[in-house]
Length: 137
Image (cartoon, rainbow, N blue to C red; front, side, top):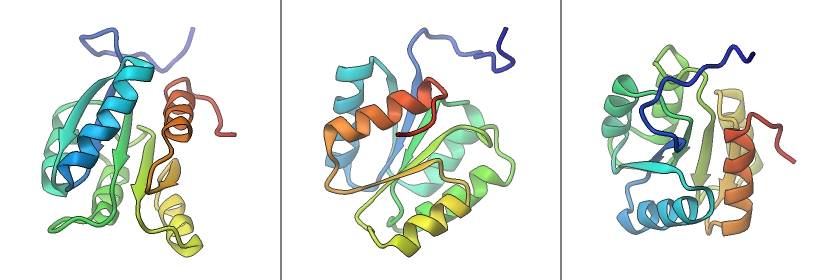
């Protein structure tokens, strides 16, 4: 039996989507709810994301980097420093596409990185693999 037991109140995977652009949050949520039947939680700021991550355990987190206030970099470091979601897969979704940025995020604990504009199929495949605990292709 797996040692990774889920203690959520719903049968659908819970995904936290963090982006300061409301239209992007809604688009990502639509992609995932349509294809994977996830239960999305939306956060428009890094501060809100950290509050939610302190209260709930998610099955995956989609995180933008460039946000006013607490940036996605800071959120990622805080999550990996010992939150309830310390081992939750974090997929960075950002307009930044430089190799250095991707490597920095992976080194800081991100599980995967996808550049905007988001390819729906690639995002769905990435989240599906993370939810199943599979390595990324």
